[in-house]
Length: 231
Image 1 (cartoon, rainbow, N blue to C red):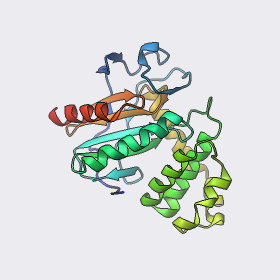
Image 2: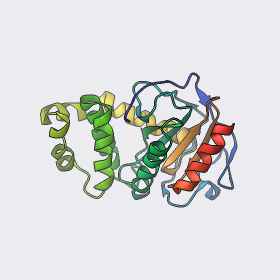
Image 3: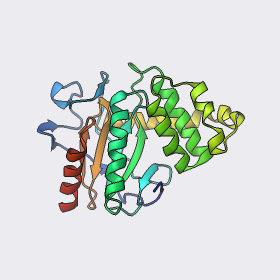
Image 4: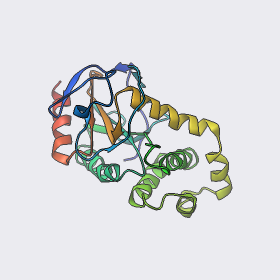
């Protein structure tokens, strides 16, 4: 089930859309209370501009069929309890709709309220780099289940199962390119209108993108998928 693959053909620029009954304007004031949905970890955001949604490529963490017509890109924070709640929801969506949906994970650590989130994101990127896509998803499960114990001790306790040495991992987490990749994901999420986590974007087969925020229940996510399939 853990696959990398098909790219979204063109970069997608988000515009105003209606999500869960509230108007979401990308490029507007991100501190608007109307943007918030239930079950969202929130931090204040600096002013940002409209930016392009980076196409999915082989550097992404992809769960599901790479040829699935619907893509959900999730911007998430390993220290966020709401993200931990949403993680199995998205997994269930993909497992129950294996020919329809693929799930892409990108990092959005809320550093102003979660001091260990960026370090966890860097650790996850290193596990992906050194152990592969399957290792990333297994490691992400560990991080969410242990979000109160994030740190080097936890990370290193899982390395052996992925065939990664502590020396390799230690070198990787100091690599500025890894940190840069995490920061690029974060800037992208903020530029798309994200002020809290989890923040997600669902993309239909035509490349039309709709953002949504919060740890939505399974039925709500499925309704978004159904709508994307019919558009």
